[in-house]
Length: 163
Image (cartoon, rainbow, N blue to C red):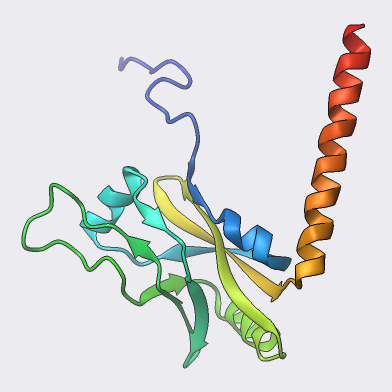
């Protein structure tokens, strides 16, 4: 009889690879969708090390297929001459009806597709796409103000419960 591993043994503390925090600051997220990624072997190894940057990355629908642009997955340091390009067009995997919905949403003026984060799901890399609309400067200030008010309220509640 084979030994069973203890629960949680060998499992990573978090399935998250990276989060695009700038996207939540610069955009208002209207809709989210989880998609698969078509990756090469060295890209997967680099993702396991957490070497990914979302700066200026976006997604687009072309000929009924979904592609991710400007996502920087650094070259794998132990890779050889078959190492991948750091920035290239990557295909995203989604159902055709979901792609049609995303196409209809992004055809409206001011809406775009932005990656919000990446995570592992059953050993496969997934990217969370968001249909977003850009925030104005006053919207960003309002968001910061609300966040600070929530933080202050939590601090008061924490101190009130101790005393």
